Image (cartoon, rainbow, N blue to C red):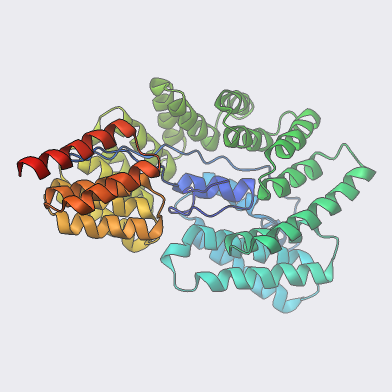
Length: 448
């Protein structure tokens, strides 16, 4: 399962759950564009939906914190209500939970809720804060305290698995997911018609990339509770992970029939319409999502992607700028940079790539994009520096070698150009393009 904007903000690590993957994917994980030197033209990233997972409506609570989400899927659902203000809301929840735990440190549920808040806060803000790792460390401590107080708490194991997952401690993450599944299996053996338990087990299976099991459990949950839009959205996401976009769209159609005000469903369906080339339908869905929630920044980002695909760079720039004005995030800057590149505004493109790299310096494609912009400005030394940085982050990216080869060629360094073109060929770059590039090397060597 790749994140990604959404997640988030260009993250490409394996993700833990339906909800977290959905939120981060909305923020954007970047597919590789394929501009062609010597006139590279980056293509937009594929629009990525932000579906979420099933979230039961909280029962009336005797204390305010008891109504807070117990798992991060609850926070993913709240994104739809106020995408711009999620960070402050989570921080306020953590403060309230700190007070509750200070008064009564014995209740495991409070630790689960605080751990969930910290995990989603990390996912949402990690590239913008210096204490990001401490959030995961604190989340693990919270879930561990909950498990020590209640060893049968499956949500605590899932939450700790998510924290370990983001921490790239995958062995520990899988152990916790498996422990959660075992507990849920025991629960379902006593009551096989528990839709919430089936959805929770699907949630755990998704952390292990077991998509067939995810869909099987969600099928059963939907059969028991066919009107739950969040379960349908979750299954739609699972179908999309498996590449069955038609099935994903069908689930979102059903979701919208049950809940015609679901911003998440319209945004997700619009993204899938892009996948199948239904651009007019995609535009209607993004317009609908924005009409329902003018602060839903991901719908602006996705609509910007659509405008970019359709060649309307000015409209794309307007949408990316609107998304950034709601809340800045690196993928929006990178995509706006690509749109500026599309209209030949290379200096503005580089400014946006600079911001994207500053916010998320570990994403190789943004270095490639900036290198392409420098290439177009005939600044080959700076282009090569960026291609070098991209290769340092991803040594298997054929396009980075191919682009660097053209930069070397135009500097007159035929040996390095030939080496890069051959490396790109070995890594799978289009053989016809490589043949043309090597022919150019040979011609220049022979004719000067």
